[in-house]
Image: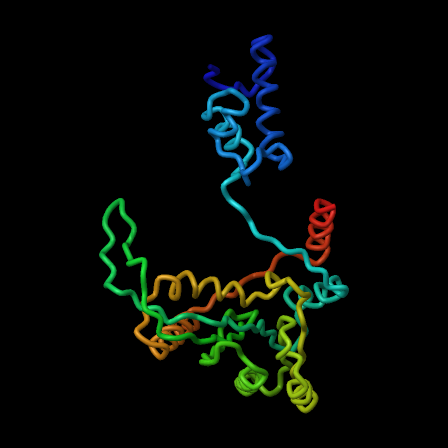
Length: 290
């Protein structure tokens, strides 16, 4: 049984060639779905080692060297929006080259946040052990967080609504609040997704009466382009996921407390990629799907 796979192939004669061929086989089987046996979605080091009649540690070493992680998946979705490029350039332009005398807000809703209460108190963390929480919980209802991220300062304007799915009334009420809290001599550029409530007739009518508020829509299936999603990830990780909430009111109070603490020392999420770089990456992804 082979003990190791040397990185070079200048020495070792037949053994070196054999090990090089084995390395190529490991890479080919790992990256080619057609090589998977029936009933399996991915290889493990042991199943692939058994297939190639080698040691599972050799497979693990090659995987580590090339960064292969068959047990993990990374979700993706390529937008089919016919106006993808135009919308991308519009939104990225606001991030990288914002208009003068204007405020740019990234706006979205985090819906169906559950007020979960554990059936028993959590145990204290100890050395070598994560903080234990009971696997079961009590449900006390849900809330929706509306958030507007000031792209330049990192500050958040937030509001919680108790409806499971928001309507145009809740969205319009929130946008009016954002507009009222922004300096009157500045234009407001608001980045949102393509949810139907954002395009409702009453929302459009209000925009006509308030021309300083300009809506910008990200392409479909492109939530990664909306910077406020970074804040949602932050509050989920630090407050919601492991939080214990005795009621919806308790949940909403803790959400607003988190926003207040965040706003006391805000840090903006800095966008760095221009539209050209993103478009090239999207084209490579499309080509890989063909």
